[in-house]
Length: 506
Image 1 (cartoon, helix red, strand yellow):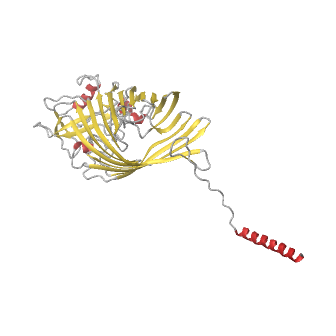
Image 2 (image 1 turned 30 degrees about the vertical axis):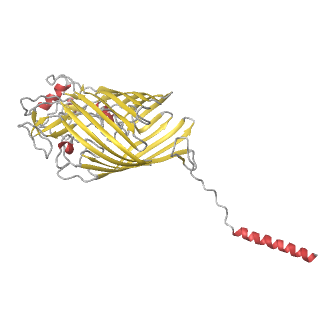
């Protein structure tokens, strides 16, 4: 019996020893992996940053597009080589872009703290076109492609305040894109890439809000023309750029109603027009003459009304967007890319080489010893957006803009008279010539999109551009080469462009 008991105890001890040895050989249990958790507080795509209560979303898009008879952002052929329609121009312009955005949000006792940034990496097929001097040419050879990094938006939001590079309080939610691909549907404000500002937004409930802000004034400036500067008698433009440095920010604000039926917004902006000096000193290293004095600054401004209508009987998701803007001394909020227009075409006059349509934008003009005469501008633009089915959609869009200098071309107390006195000086003109710097711009286009799968869209956009200039007769001009310095007829001009695009959002 004692022998059996000993065997049992010995076997148990052996089993314990073996089990201990096997346990010693097993790996230590790994620490639980901290998986990224979905954050549903701020919509789809947000995740908690591991180890924090901050939610982050990384997004963006890849875009590849080509424009025929236009610039890389579907700019119409309204100046530079494209406006001249010379052989140095690019018949098409291609662009490839990667846009990356980072959006972070954290709930606090003061509300959500948000930071947002978006950067665009671009490869453009050419650098030969832009917003430069009307008629200017890049050179005698085709310009090579360019690579660039653009920082669109960088801002922080806290307790109703926004600090950084963000959309102005003057802007509508759709900016300059009521239904178009083109970045050049003028007739209203557009700062989709943001401007440096500080602003505060108050929510009043039921979709009603109000925002007031201070914007970087450089973004809101077109040009201020000193018409006491003598131009060559063959110059296309008048005067000389005479803005001073920034003295005060633009004061902007809006009241907005955003509900299920759509949106209504009233916006306003105040902009200080600040001149540099009265006279230039010939041959000086710095041509500005401080002892000549300067006109007093003037405040200009602009107002805008915007409307969006949803739930249309034409189909689900259809809407209409429209905005109307008036500006005085703040032309940038109507002609937002600060463009001046110089378009060349055919002529039926025997005394002229070709025709030219011309329009120069400005916030104001002045003669030395006088005060600033502010320039007026107004515009309307909009779009009807229609979904044919879940895969196909189209937008019909358009705009109309006008620039008015005011007064008479023979009255030197008015902006128009001062402008024409500078432009006409020494110029050789036809018997039927008359000077009038006022002009109108019209645009009309249609875009159709195909989305075969979610977040992948193919589109084609056609746009017509019309410049209605107010000069008459003909005059000798000296546009940049390859155009010859000779006589040109003043005449309205047209351009048609096509943009094709493929874009993948993520």
